[in-house]
Each structure stands twice: as structure tokens, then as C-alpha cells.
Image 1 (cartoon, rainbow, N blue to C red):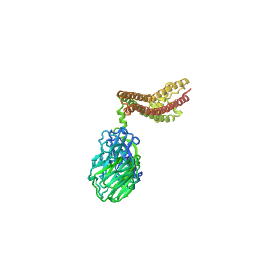
Image 2: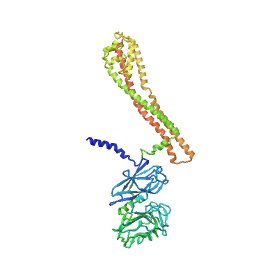
Image 3: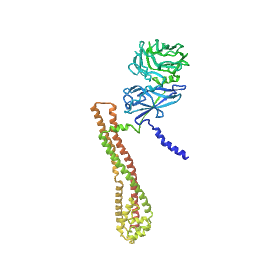
Image 4: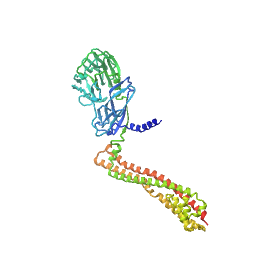
Length: 584
């Protein structure tokens, strides 16, 4: 039982730390991204797959918190420890749009893989690794992100020997390549691109046809030929041929095929459309893309392994414009390090704002001291009042004639009674009790009117004498109330003055912000927001002073009113006793 208890306690203390784990404190923000394989209906899984992340205003609205080129982006696995390789295809903070490729080590069918996107580190160096974003079998990847000839982002650097394709700015994944029937992309033969029957081969691309084609060649490598006849894709090699269903003109299609020992497979939009015999002859020839094609290409990829059906299913689902399978979570801010929003706000507070905040800080300290000190005093008063009343109500009528005992003989006589001993000026028991002090005033008044000898028998107090004693008791009560309410005015000043001082600081800060904007001529939300937020800090500080003071004032005021009521009741009760035992 004890062991289980300690384990539970340790878990409670450890869990918040785990929940707040932060990969690197130098990064100020992060966003959780979930990759789901259920939408692609994978039969098995894929390894080392590059995932396309589309960032835009619909799922990410914090481009202003990143570096202008996005070089402070980092991606970390779900364990919040393992960095993931990535590279940026497009980053446009003006239009708030980005395309980023992230390599995921493992994607299991029917599972969800969480990753973290970190950003917001002005001092970060560029962490992109285009070559590391793909496995060693990926021989060529053209994003067509550049305005000139396409560039291979893999480690093999299979750049075009010749490219006459025009840029297509509005392709599926950012930019693409436009073919007008005469344009072509030629790639020289390279060992990294050759086909081996033992290893296999894969090709994939996004294709949009402007219309029916006249024997357009999508890809040719030696005897291997993928062409478009009309709208029908055809695959040919020395071992045979196959054809898929007709494509739709004006629509983007994901077209892919694989070669391997198990045959030739043609995939359209992630679904196997046809299968044929394997190609038994090795190929090491130049590659031609887009000969006689009228349309557009995007995201051309070649791999020297036969990618499985799950690979193309996942690519088709996640890369399409209306693709599914990727969920973007909320953004989190690092609360333990880095430049938080609050730090940015404080950096923009003006001098006049700091003056107001300093005054408010002094008011807050004074208010806190008053509340603490007054609370301690009221606690002692209530305790000593209770002790005094307990002893006062024990007094019987036989002791009333000894209220004026003052000499040492009386002290010895009353040594057994702490209360009677207190009546002869021994105050150790009720030093903080205002009731005792009022009572002591009454004792002195009686003593002055009846004589100082304990054995003296008073002839009785007249009505005028009792009224005079009442006046003395009321005066003592008022003085005790003044003591209890002493310094409470400081709390009322904090309650009423704090918000107004804060408002003054805010108004002045807003005036300075707009004056600075008018002087510089830079009118945009990024120029206005920090100054306005900093100006509002003064109002927050004013409320921070007033709210605790308001709670403390009301609480202490209610306790003082209770003590005041007790004193008034005691004065009436005490006068009743005096009139009963000492009146004429």
C-alpha cells in the first residue's frame, strides 16, 4: 500500500512536467500535427515516407512569429525528442502560405502519428535537409519550385541536361511545369537512375491534361515508355504493355507505376488500375519527360525500388488539394523560456508606463502590508475579546463591590483570580482586547466617584453619574474604533485610485503609440499591436492593485464591524451592571 501511494504521488508530480515537455527552450512556439493513415486505407504501412504539410491561414495564422524565410522551422517526433528531417518547397509569409516536406520514419496502417512543429526562434540557423528528407532509394524529386529549370532535391543531384518546360505558377503543389507539345525535360543517364530487375523501379507524378493527347510521352527511358494516348495512359516495355482507364482533362491525377519481379503495376490516384508482366532487362538510359505533352506536371519522383500500393495511396490522399489524413492542432507557447508574448509586451512599455506601474507597485506593497498587519491585529483582538468576555461573565454580584481594589493587599487577595487581578492594572491577559480597555475606563470612573478603599461602602451612583460614565465609555468605544479603522483608508485609496492610475498610463501609452505611427508613417497591425498591448499593461497593473485590496477591505471591514457590534453590546451590558449594583 505504501509503495503504491508513493508511486501515485510521484506520478502526480511528474505528469505536469511530461505534459509541458519542450524539445528546445530556444523555440517560443510549437504546433501539434497528426498524420492519420485511416483515410488512405492502407493495408500495411510505409517507412521513411515524406509527408507534405500545407500551412495556410486556415490551419496556421502565426507566420508573423517566424523568420521571413521560415528557417526557424523544426519538426520533432511525437516523443518530443527526436528531430525529423524536412525541407521547404515554398514559404510565402506575405500571402501566409507554405509547403513543407517532412520525413516520417514509420506510418502504420490504421494508426495516428503525432509530430511537433516548432517555430519562433529569431536566432535559429536554417535546419533544412532536402537530401535527408528521402530514403536512399529515392533517386530523383522535382518540385518545380524554382522559376528556372527544375532542381533535384535528393542527394543524387540528377539535374536536367535540358529543360524547355515553362513554369506553371498555379500547379497542384505550388509551382509546376507547363508543356505545350514542344517542350521537354531531358535527364542524362546516371547509375542512381538505372533500373535493375533485382531491385525494381518506381515513377510517380501529378498530371493535368489540357485535352486529348497525340501519343504524348510522359516518361521514356530506353525501351520503357509511359505515354498518353488520347486520355488513356499506356505502359510499354519489351516484356509487354498495359493500359489504364481514361483520365479526365483539366483535372489533376496522381499517376504512378512500378517495375519489379512481381510485374508491372499502374496506379491512378492511389488505386491500382492495371498490372502486367515484369521487365527482365536492366536499363541505364537517359530519361525524357513530357515529350509532345500538352498539359502540366508537378511533383515528379523516381525511386530505384518498387514502391508499394500503400505508398501511392498515402501520397495521393495527402498531396491532393482537398487531401485528407493530416490534422493540425492548436498552437502552444513556451511558458518557461524564450521570448513569450508577455516579454514582448514588457519590452514595448514606455517610460511613462513604467512610472505608473512603479507607483502602482508601491501601492500594492502598502496595501499588502496593511492587510497583513490589520489581519494579524484583528485576529488578536478577537482572541483576547473572547477570553475577556469569558472571564467577565464569570463575575458574580459578590465581587462587584471589589471593582475599585488597588493596593497590594487587594492584589494578594485576588491572586487566585486572573480576571480580578487584571482589574488592579495587571494587563497581561487582555492587552489586545478593546473590551478590556473600555471596561478599565469604567472601573476608573467608578473608582473616582466611590473612593479608592476597597472596604469603603459607596452610597450609590446618581443618574447623572451613570450618564457621565456612559459618555466616558462611548468616548472610549469611539477611540477603539478609530484604532481598528486606522490605515484602512489606504485600502480605499488603492481600490479607487489604482484603476484610474492604470487607465491614465494606458491612455498616455496609446497616445504615444499613435504619435509614433504618425511620425513614421508605418500604419500596419504589427506596428500598432505591441504599443497598444504594452499600454494596456498599466490598466492590468491597476486592476491587480485594486482587486486584492477590494477583497481585503471587505473582509477586514466585516470583521471590524463585528468587533464594533460586540463593543456596543458590551457597553450596554456593562452599564446595566453598574446601574444594578452601584446605582442609588
